[in-house]
Image (tube, rainbow, N blue to C red; front, side):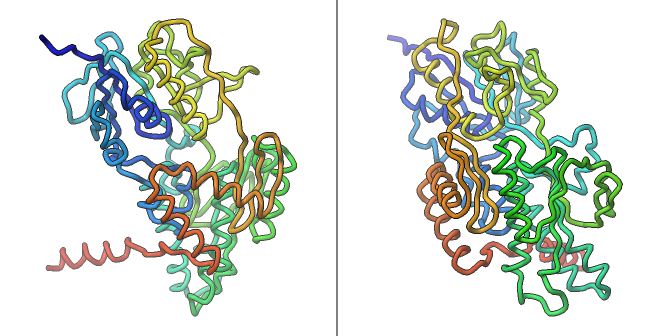
Length: 428
């Protein structure tokens, strides 16, 4: 008797959304193919801690193959998706033959957007990938080293000016940690400079920090940052970024260390779906997260423009992607594709942001609070959502070390050694 051919489900992206679809369908009667341009699942909420030397890359990243190794129905491919042919029902990959699908889940995530000023990227890297985080970490650490080499105070200060553009949770967390690095981790490490002279600026175009959170929490976050020595510039737009620094309105902040945390744009692959898109390049999805006229295609996470009751799109945060992934997995697992189903409804359990080592602001289940209790809540929730027990243990140990000592455990600079190695090879 011939073996029954199973339908093939292709999942593009192994982030929070795509991975949760695959995990929930481990025993489903589908052949599942997970395609991602990297070989790891990245816990993005803690990416800023890699960028600020608190954690190592392997603490927050896990191989996708390891996560799904027990799933006999799942194949993992590391490749870049070039386009989707919705009529032929296949995806085109960079280094693989076209891959046919019966069902498709698009969870491609997002990249940072410079709002049409892409030339700013080389001066102000964003934070979306491990490579981004390592670039920012190297820039921060190298800046102090360059300052130590300077003969004049003004030149050294340029290297010790740090500008974070964007006052959302990522920007607030970055600014707070950089200030703590200067005030604690780098203290007494240098002989010619005082790391406490570092200046940290956070720039937000809205009239307050954390504009998506309640006003009182944004006010408390700004107060905590200012206590750490951070200067918050709100209600001002960045008009230029170049080798000299950042122009905020008419004010030039001279800096060689600028970090972009101000905007996102969806993957260009989404344009090949031929669906309606918003200004950020996200696909406008149906109430069940499929796209119009193609019930076999679902778009989730940062790639989806999914409207709430008031018509605003859901934010591009991990809880949204996780819940959407589980919702789509339920539709597929129960063979409800193309049938009438309950629309996706996001359960908003709250939002939070940390400000340094023991402070945070949080709104959880409708309750607003801040300080040490909010920081403990933030820590426990993030530990719980890490994929593997190994990651949880490593992160907990690093956090305990950092909390007790005020030091950073991942401060190695690779750039100098790599440059010297290159010079040595050329000389030989």
